[in-house]
Length: 341
Image 1 (cartoon, rainbow, N blue to C red):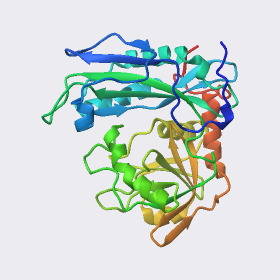
Image 2: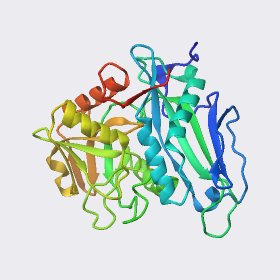
Image 3: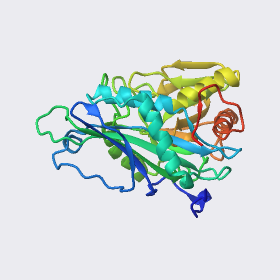
Image 4: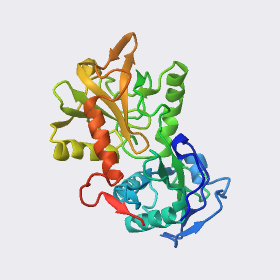
């Protein structure tokens, strides 16, 4: 199979139209048989529920070419479960987990020429999305939906790759108490766009959102979870009911504790204690881990000892171990690597 003629090492994190996408429609109370199609456009009613009441949820995972030439996907079963959890929370029909993984298999195989070669640092980003297509004008769930998977080859999420980021503590809230912060719904990301633009306009790479109730505890950014490393090498992850349960974070926590033998703690993290940490990173499917060098909280600048030039040693070890598993260089826990072809 001949690969596409692309400059794989220069790819950014942006949309590219690939050859095939997978769709399945929900109508009359059931999901129809899915299929691969070539048309990247969506046609639906002007009164579709997604347009008026934001009934949409999505996922993100990646396909990689391993050292021995296989194409694999990292833990798609967890994406299937999270999509179900997200859909059910905003009254959408859950897409069956087994069909979800089968759909991933089909669309990745069909777009195998777009999967970046081993060693390029790039991957095939897979975006499953579900949205309300049925017309609805009263405030209620729609009766019809579409599940769709699109793919695209991507490079690093943040420009500059592993160069440490500068964040600002946002004056805005990402999620409400007892709201939708813990699910992967499109409306959460819409809520973060103004804050994201505000941070960029002030020269920052991203926001640090605090808890919406007391505004004293660290939550997440608009698209990634936080990891902290103490000066004695303990991994600390923030705890909150409104943080999205990142699959990458959960995987890194397991790697830290069971592979690297680190002490791991998940607890509330006060913004006031940030100055006491040795390293900080953002983690998620898109970024894997991006190091943070500095956080600005009003007039206070918090500079981590790991610096602004490269990843801290613990963060780098975590990054190298997880990406090594994804690339087939390091043995992964059973069930983590799903082989496509």
